[in-house]
Image: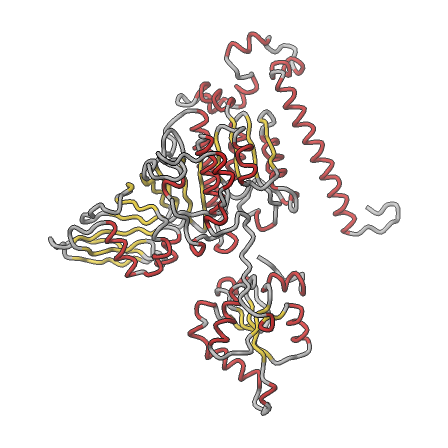
Length: 467
Length: 105
């Protein structure tokens, strides 16, 4: 509004929204902590304030631990003969730690808060990004740039203010793992990388906690309950970590949002079964979800391995061993999901995206080869680039020679005026591999554009879409 | 004579008719996760001689799809939806599933 005659810019509005959002979040935090304090007096008292005709405390307590509000809120699951009051009271007494507030953690947390688990902990160090929202349904646009834990906690409190939500805004590491996990009864692994999976499994073995492990990538998902009543742990199944080439990330390979959604819901279900002490948890079995063919298979997996280095007979992992174990070294991959950065080339075989831009502006004769897969190229590409995916480079070298000849033109008799050859990809790793190969194949002038299209968007053209 | 469905990753099916032979054993191999990328298939049929173990089948598959070597030491092997030691001898029309772990989320 510019009623006072001062011109208002979108930046002003954004600033105001931001400060109001901050104030709102603070107020919401205060409300939920007050509610938590109130409920520690027993919600009976709260009811008396709100309604003078409410039953007296001793009358309410006749039905056990559930307050009238709770009975009403959870009535639909109390009505289930196989669940009932007993399981509900078990949930209420139970605490669940969800590690990762992403694609798996989002639905898992929403259901765990909704169903009435007594205390829910959330661990994550990341912030919400726009490209998370298609699958991480607990977060909203208003939280972009803010902590995932803060966002997820607010969503859980909004659904169920009677559940105690504990925020752990930190990366899960061997240095804090024991201290955090110790405070909970059940752990849900909703992380996205190999070292975390080994670390969480080992931590659960050391502290004797059941682990609800879910994973999703592309159009497939997997689910198992580990370390439950003598069942196997993650290491019993996978004593040797997969090679790094076999470890794919959603950020590289893609994932359809519903797929982690389905697995995350199933993780909540298994956690509720373990917490409520109902049914048959998925221990010693693995559920495989195939979204494309709409198939779910449950495979019986091996039992606890006597040779297991974590839970085996002669090798009970101790807290100290756990703290000193190097999970990144063991799996050869980083705990943070930051993408790999290769350094394969000498500096003279590389140029920055800014330099490349200057050269094109000057009109330098050149060919730009984009070595990303074709379906990436279709998302977005630089004008006049030639798409030859790295996998087919070997077979398509003649296309590069032809393109270079076209650029050099028929009038150009001077050898020194030859066209330059630049190679680009998404982040600057495959382009280095391509340049290395091109050098070997006689394209000695090939240069890699450092940091790929990601740095191009960052340093040269902020309007260039990233993905 | 019997018919087995054979499906590749694009969902196309082709029906293969095989003579059911006393001296040969045919198993169906199911690929999951990374094994699908490496083979380009969701499943395949494998003809082996009687007495062949799950271990032999794996070796045969790696010869057919050398890329599978990558996940050789990190997978769950299930025969007819149950965990199996690699020494188990496969029988005709068994289903062998190759399940490498997924780590994304």
